[in-house]
Amino acid sequence: MNGEFESGAGAPVGSGPVCRARLRGGGRCALPPSPGKQRCFQHGGARGIGAPRGNDNAWKDGFFSRVEIAERRRINDFIRGCNAVLERIDAQMKADPDWERYRATRRLRP
Ligand SMILES: [Zn+2]
Image (cartoon, rainbow, N blue to C red):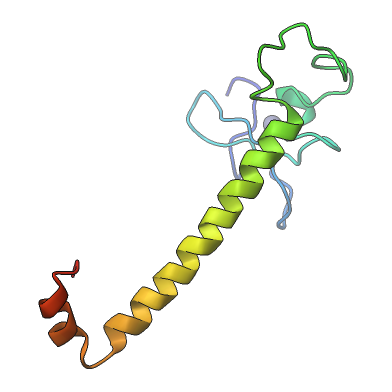
């Protein structure tokens, strides 16, 4: 193909992180990412690629800064945790033999 690895072809065996690049053919790159990067050396993970650390030439509001990204991830993980708890509670309630009768009196979602 175009010099890129199709997923599965020439891929390192085993698990572990994999390059996040999407290929033109629609597949995923199967190479391991470069150390400290999310992409392999072929897809932008090579050493010396990218803006130098601390470069703020394109800084607008910091939405994509490491700190902001980490904070959003922290909040989203927390929300996912809350939703998981609610799902478990929901499942327990619906497993109750009296659930249908209770639901009918409260107009709750099925
Ligand atoms: Zn890659």
